[in-house]
Image 1: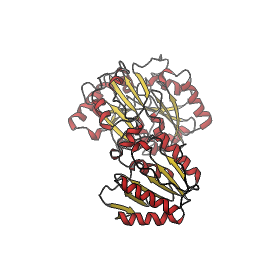
Image 2 (image 1 turned 180 degrees about the horizontal axis):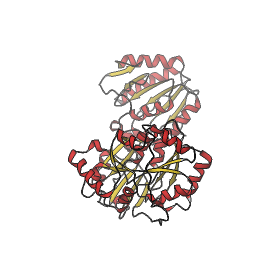
Image 3 (image 1 turned 120 degrees about the vertical axis):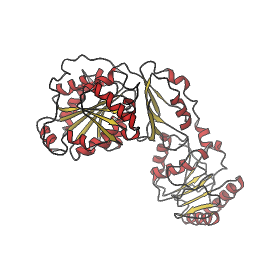
Image 4 (image 1 turned 90 degrees about the horizontal axis):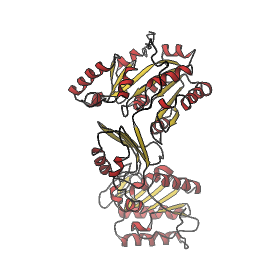
Length: 479
């Protein structure tokens, strides 16, 4: 922690308010730029998010920070209750050196400053993030909430400035100069330029932190935001292409879309973050419930009328070839993998038989549903364990991984399980060794991996494994 801010924290908990319109990059700046600068001080982040699910809070918690969340609405409407209670609990029970308050993108910042003042925090200032492309376009920053956030700012952080063209960036600086007197700094991937840190005295210069002399938040009445939201739990799967076509056709009154979308393209649920100027996909934080929140100045329900028809679980499993594993894979015909190196399919089968013969009882078999068209799995000894993959959802995979770990079997055999899901389950369970018999790709991370493309080959290998294990009849169980 810096010299100046350490001195401020001796008397009261130091606080910073990070504000900015929907999708302007507040959370990314906090995680990438601000929190590393405050280390090793004890920092608590208080996050508010519109909608039923607080995605920003999940993301920060996954990054290893203490996060308290206020969900289901804008904190500017809850200053008299939940927000004050949360601020007091942080101050009295957690006793941090720092509080970072991230307001909703639809929040009026002045009531938040009022709340910090009433709870006896030492508010050092307000940082307002602004999307560079939004500020640099004629129809950007068109709502009064964005103007209010800018007027409250001590500094303005122009996010994604490195991704816009020079004329757009120049226009953004000109527009901001008409809306705020605060200095404007650029950021790259959430990390501000050096002059930004010098403004906040992170160079240990010891200058006084600028504060608003007239404290304009005092006595300000609370106003509800004009932004409306609609959050829905998602059923079934989508493709990224279908979702992006839907995004491109959204009406102009939609200002933000965010959530967790199960996509056929990957076994890992994808986090979607959309604004009218750009969007991004990335791995979702944790085993998140699939959902999507639409925020709009008009009607947040209407975009759902054109939401793509979801793909069912059985069809996802049948379209095995379309889902890409997260880790390395090899689709060369006739190439298998054993012990971390490519080999012939014959060598892979011989090594597989030898390894299973050493201890067939230490084996857990995983098979797909019968509807996926993979021939019946071999019958294993009663001492072995077997599961049918119920669906490709992250929740079901997590549940199955817990069951596999509970039986303490150190060897997993994936029999026709979609390649990407086999790779995902192996990474979740971390077995001592695992074997993959797939349909389309081999997985170099497996101890043995080969593709079996015909029904006769599946039946022949099943008979071979049955003979090796000297099995008694065993039905595959489903939990």
